[in-house]
Amino acid sequence: MGRDGDLSRRAVMISGACGLIAGAPQESRAQAETWTTAPPMPTPAQEIYPTFHNGTLHVAGGIAALRADGRLDVSDRHLAYDPGVRRWRDVGALPYASHHAQLVSHGGQLFLIGGFRTDANGDWIASDAVHVLGDDGWRAQNPLPRPIAECCAAIIDGRIHIVAGRTPSGRANANWRDHTDTDTHLVFDPGAGRSIEAPPIPSPRNSAASAAIDDRMLVCGGRTVSGDLSDDLLMFDPAQGDNGGWVRLAPMPEARAGHAAAIVGETMYVFGGEWFGPGGSGVFETTLSYSVGQDRWTTLGPMPVPRHGLGAAGYGGDVFVVGGAERAGADGTTARLDLFSPG
Image (cartoon, rainbow, N blue to C red; front, side):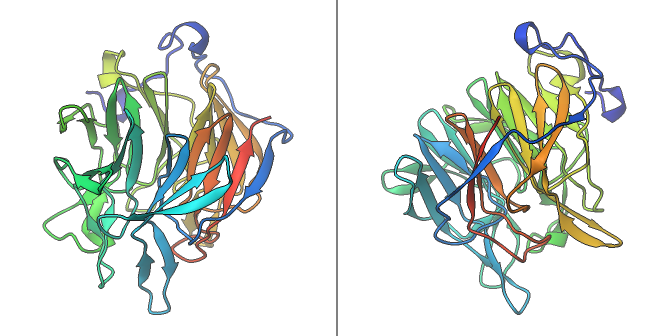
């Protein structure tokens, strides 16, 4: 397939109400959205990818705290929040303590995919595991072709697409520095229990955010091991023959990584993220929205508590924004849960 320079944005790529207007600019406007604080998680967690499953918000694992000795406390807990009664419960233990693992709800089943396993030494062991939740706990499925963490995931045409992230760069697999960015694009078929290769994302990246709309996958931002942030917005549309289905859309107003995204209607909302630079580091405050129908970004107001490594999941017209860290890096992890209601 074509690489970065071969991609183009097209007005004709989506028909009907979702037709894109190529070249549309981004704008800023007064904040019309509302934020509501909900009961926090029982324990703090960052580097999580939550999802709604059967009307309940599920959170798996994550980094709970940065210890005084510099090692990470990583969780093996599976938590669930019922928005109807505004209450959290402890579902049970994961197969192992992990962070940056994807949770995906599909076909009435809940899947746990990849991520970094950890042990008493605090190792970052990229995992190729796929588990599905059953009545008796998590059951192992056929593994992925390669270990992957910090990836994106979306349901397209009844299958789980797993895109980008980090994977071991050599034989070592025990430290963050043992891994490199990947342009991986795998398609996991829950019915067949196997994965196949698909057209790779145009450039490797980790810590991107993604969302799905109408059997298409949006992937925005991310970074590389060199620390460079991306302002890319890419769409994978399997109906597009050129460039393997990947199409470049309007870039984000600012490059971000470690952020979260969710769809409400035909709008994608992007929350948080972190940056590092010669002058220090920080967390992005403003919320962004992207109109799929207009290919247009809008800069909204600030989050009540800006953070990175957070999760976002849309449900009932709202976005549930959960966890993360208030400072760049592994420190300042929070248990916070906010509801974002679009204006």
